[in-house]
Length: 257
Image (cartoon, rainbow, N blue to C red; front, side, top):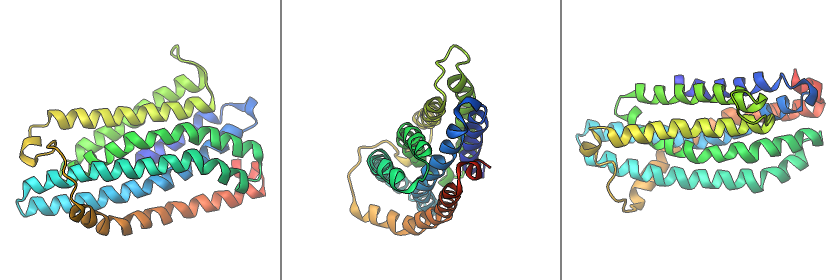
């Protein structure tokens, strides 16, 4: 619950700080909100993958097949990184053209492209977090995932305040600062989980870090369980993305409200 809440906290933090850039006529505020919704909608694919993986891992633990947990974990890293790379490429090369065609206010569209082109790089550390989070949730240690999420949110708040307004000796970057802050915060959560995993005494029991040998039967099993969860999450968040796109067509003031 805390982990899911964190993404909303990050969006609220970005919006709260960016709403103070009055001289920018509200463009950074609405741009971060709309492109942030698009980013979160796309990350639902990774969230669905995590949910499917933790179900499989929990089942293997219940069957006392501990080495199977490591095999699933290693394949989740592979799938998550490939999926994350695909999402990153779409955000970098497809989204700008889509914004140009769909967003009515060209200033908002340009700002959305600027924000998402930076923010989307956070998908790589998020993919790494997905694999480790699936393992810790699947093994019943959700507190590890919660601490990583809290670190992510706290880092984002600190860096947002620093990089948007130029506080703490950091550069004043405005909208770009919000995007860079979130990417760095994503990496802080990923580094915490990776470090914890490397130091975890149970890593040997579950054979987490053995050399991966790609087994398509495991990939098929993971995707068969995860794809419905991916689509469910995407539809749930995508509906709101469509809604705010429709509001943008009514006008900038309506969208800002």
